[in-house]
Image (tube, rainbow over all chains, first blue to last red):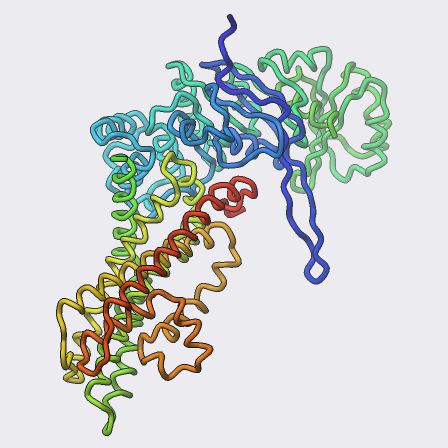
Length: 326
Length: 261
């Protein structure tokens, strides 16, 4: 018999209702999730990638019982996230990105003690666990300082400690490295990997491709409330394995030239990022050499800087997926 | 059950700690009641005023401080949690919101009782005001009943603040309304009859009436009836609170209103 998945969504939908207008108010419906199917095995480190507003946080909030779906089912550890919220909350942990969500005027230790009580951890267990978590997350020695004196990285590690107070079987991390410096983000990623290695099931949302590539066993890409791709980071990269990437820098590239690039045979996507006075253009295509040959004609005399061709990365696969879906 | 009691006492402890380090809390339990008491005592101590009127200044400032802290703990406290991003965090724990709010409200009540200290000191040392005919037992029981009414009102109103942000904008209106309607600073007999009707459905009105009566000789006093009325109204609030918390537990999960964004 197959082992039951740790996290599962079946035809999961969520629609938010709001109003707009001042004098003539009208109701507005916004679909955040549109029939998502997802299955995550026990012990997996699963990454959900997607742009802002794609539905990542909504999905995490449904699994963590903070939101009710409009329809469909969401189960975690075999428990229904809608009906079994009290039993489920004891067995899961969640950490949201950013430095809010803590009592800044209390010490880190006070924060952990309080949440340990709210998670209904027996006092003898919570004392030992808080001590272990402070040690493991590098907060030992600063636990009696007020949280407002902590660095961003320390606050995020305190968040993680809070999420682990009840020794959860499943941990939900919603953009946990957002706003962290590279060293702090790397430290946090390594802790997350360690947690997965000791058997925790981890559901991580991020929009950093390298993060998903570095730590996740499996990923899914979400766009406009729907999953557009799912698999290992390598299998997602394989979606663009037959392609190459041409990158170049120009100044004052007109929109006709961008349209001209898009119209070239074999071009899958063109992304333009404004960088100071220059534009960094990334072209995904099946034959990079053809694009490079025709580039000067399309740019029509605009001087080119830094032209290069490279192998596609997970980020390129992501850009293509997001581009295709839109 | 034990773990729920521990969660409530932890919420109480955090509520008290946050108040100890918050300058705003000192305004509520010390500065504002003192100002109200000073004005009240000054007006009531003018020549020609009855000595027993000073009791309204003596107790009134403390009552205002007590109510403000108890009530604000429900309103501001929840709004602070929302701004700090902790409202969603505490909601997502296996402890029902009701239990957490219960602990926080008790913390507010303890802090609110402190408001009687500066106002009583001002009344005694500044205006030589004393309770003319204090019936100590009835006074203590009335204060206990008053505490129960504040507890029940704060517990009932808090889910409204958690669920609907517009409810928070009415916080000051209701805070000041209760000062007047429940007779904190003057007897409600001076209010118009229709306002007295409103006052009658507010549980603190009866507890405050009993509290003042326990310090004054003039009768007739019907303490038991007043205490029972205050208790019955408090019970009615708790029934409403039960349904409100069920509504919050569900509606907050439908609308996602607990997050700031």
